[in-house]
Image (tube, rainbow, N blue to C red; front, side, top):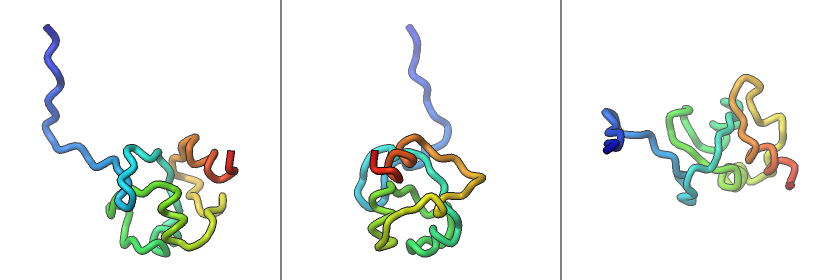
Length: 82
């Protein structure tokens, strides 16, 4: 019988820290945008795009994303309201 994997370290949180949405997708915004949303650094948590827009009190635009960071399909669809 195959035994389940036991993680040696605690898994990082994957829920939005504002609304609790599970696994909100991966995207990387510029540091200035992250700080504008009230975060000190990238280790402050995970947030979904909807909650990030609420914190910013504005629409997220493509220029908010870091060109060198990952961006999931969810982020792309959100930006273009697809």
